[in-house]
Image 1: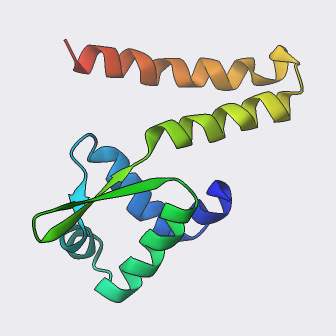
Image 2: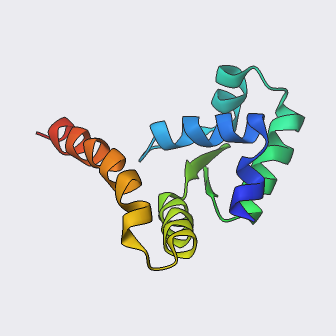
Length: 111
């Protein structure tokens, strides 16, 4: 369900923005403004992402703040790696090597 939710371009844009906004997230109005998506369209996309477990929401005062469920994304990617590689580490090794710079950049960003 997570992959199907991310297959639509606007939902992928929403999710990318939310991941970049971690850990604070974004109010719905800010998401709509940044992505130039009508509020009712955005609500439908956020509903699909929420049902897929990729987005969480929290009411703060008069607004609803949306956040990416990064743990769900990690679990989906891990499932794909384990399932598609079928236990053959040589198949996934190049992909894991490509991801290593992401971890190094993230570690340096917190220094």
